[in-house]
Length: 258
Image 1 (tube, rainbow, N blue to C red):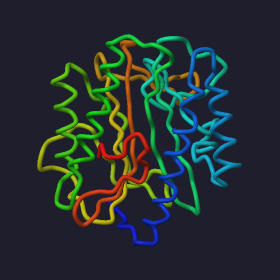
Image 2 (cartoon, helix red, strand yellow):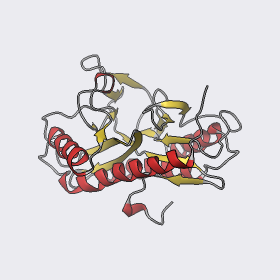
Image 3 (tube, rainbow, N blue to C red):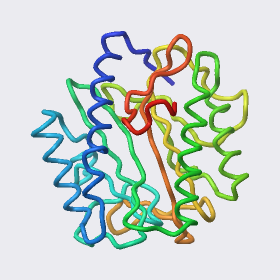
Image 4 (cartoon, one colour):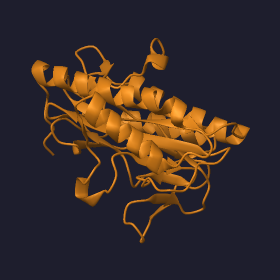
């Protein structure tokens, strides 16, 4: 397993790409409402990334993925493909944005509520975000990836949720997905030891029901929970610093929280 340590120059480029990805999520928020289609959201994001940010939407044509963003609704865990079906009141949706700027990637996702949602959906989304924040706060040199995965898994399971195992966080930089794999479950004291200059995503996928998932045979991308119970995910891109971490994709609403 080869994990690249980024130079200060590379980290600065990732800082820019991460900020742009965060700005896309901030920009799209007012458009997420009942009646809008995920294709419309995809087009708005695509135009903003290309025309306003002079950047590239990384998912478009990545291994054949047909759209510029991923939109995962309710029981869809990840990699949902935008389509013409309107969002409805009470839906929860994860919008996953990755932009490429000057050759470097910024990758982040956020959960959005479509109108008023039920309390059990709110709780799932909140706990999933807590899992992300818990994992991020642990990041510093010397910590092992198994420590982070274990902490995320414990927090999810003590709240009676489950952690998806087939999909995980990943190293990122000039390459969209590189080493290491960042699992959201694990055993303390195992896995890669973090070093300053490592860049990766943490993106726990937390299910209301069982952890098991299935991949759509129809499109080869959409991942759903087997039991059709809802799933929630949040994602940030970060770098390990000499003393802790820096989040490249932090949104304005999160200032002071991490």
